[in-house]
Image 1 (tube, helix red, strand yellow):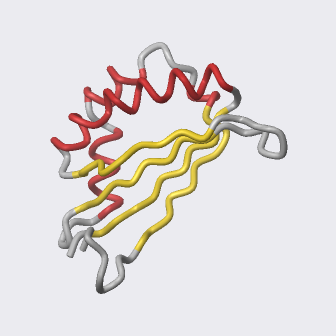
Image 2 (tube, rainbow, N blue to C red; image 1 turned 90 degrees about the horizontal axis):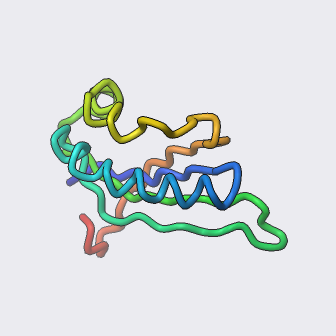
Length: 109
């Protein structure tokens, strides 16, 4: 069974969300090289009552892989550095990494 993680990025504003959405599209092939599979990426724009725009990404790691090790390898890669070039990392004001366990009947088991 794969190890799943929901990654929730809180961004400083709508422009940052738009820019980071494009960066995430670039991340997908580089992450795959590091055995991290992206299953989906979603955005939630700022709205009254929810002033912080967010980007959600559902990723998985192979069962036997160390999640931290895989992620750190990607973050140290030339692909990641190229993806992030020109983006002010300060535009990401929060990151939650939520491990998810699929239920017995989940299609993503």
